[in-house]
Image (cartoon, rainbow, N blue to C red; front, side, top):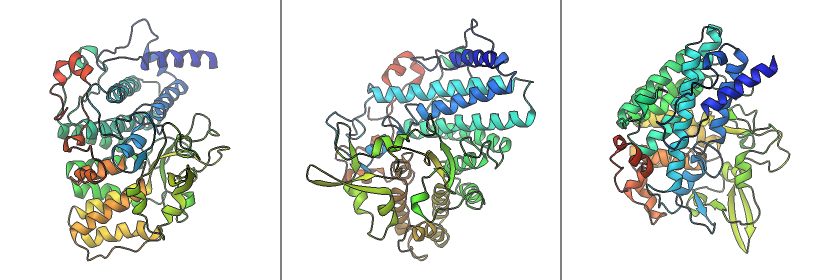
Length: 453
């Protein structure tokens, strides 16, 4: 039985992970095993979904490695200083339409979206899986699709949006306006929330629950300017007894942290995290990056984040600081890569209140973070401009190297041009990435190119 299940799963993965230069040139070959066979069995269905989670961990786009948005957007903004010898287009703000990084991300995202769409189609059509379990698995997959589109549309602007695996409808697909893509993401997340529960499918929080979809939806509402709804959904998470801010900051990034909303395990649970692999070192190497002077100077001596999340090293007579959120370079027994944590809900809530001009309430929420980090609370009588500055600075100190938070927050406040102070090559049009030139050549409906490229 196990051998049969393995062969079915192998066939499904062969179908779902077909590489393609163009997102539209993918279809399920008739020579492969029928998807219906896979979705007759709960084991292969769950295994297929687990492979989608693995794709998220290993992808060019969402990975915590040096090629994913967590690290590269920290270089793209001003959180990290690149000390490597090779050219880094993110750090130099020199991306172009023919840059390989741009194509890798675009192709990677749409390849994974295709896989997710195929899974959703196959499971939706199956009559063999228990209804309650089917709803849970569909809710997870729909949230994963929304997750990819959520970051893709913020980076590229108008983008193709499809829930289909049909070759003919996808091969000439056009870019959908930014606002419409946000609405489509909202629709997906609203559906996912109706399918998911607060309870996790596993005790380790490896699989998505309702709070993950709620967090994404709250941020989606910020992007749409629906600040009351952003407040509503972020407040749901803040009020959820499953999550608490860890008062001991040394526990924030441990796998048993009370603040973790969703985390991803390494390939083997004893493997070190990609963050530890990337950021823990004693000597400078070809691709080394350290904490920027801008970020370092923003921490006061009493800020517990400086004590717990930064590490001082001495190399070639220089005193430098590295990122130290994850501690285990060897013998990892207590760390997984955390994707979403409760503090994100607090910042979304504070931002939604600020943008409704509810300054005292926004200050109260932000102060729950500030006081837990050992720093002076902000006055509830602060001006809107000063509250904005406080929120942006605290977010940078809280979420450096996490999900490109600084880039996305500055963009929501229309303050990305502040990066010119520390990034001499920064231009206003860098608020969007270029569409890959190869894709524009293959599908003329993807034109025009984003301004500036």
